[in-house]
Image (cartoon, rainbow, N blue to C red; front, side, top):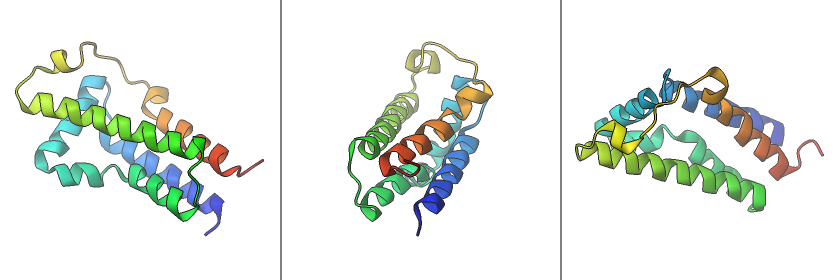
Length: 129
């Protein structure tokens, strides 16, 4: 499969991930994650499709350079941070203890991952260079 097609799949997966977590505030985003986490941790992992797709891309393209590795690391840290918050919420902590500040989720902030990760993928694969 050509790299441009892989890029479009990556963008689609990022849009999917942003949409299932979508909310007007950061507390709402965390709450949406927590609802899925409560149903099943396996479902929670399955809905983070772009993380697994990034792992697939690294192996498929045999690309473990700085840019591709940075995507994997940032996505892993994002999931680990969210899982840590979910665990605290599950143990009865208040959301204000877990995340002290509620932030309004603007359109740019909500879809920033759709720009950052695919752009990093373009740099990783030297697609247009």
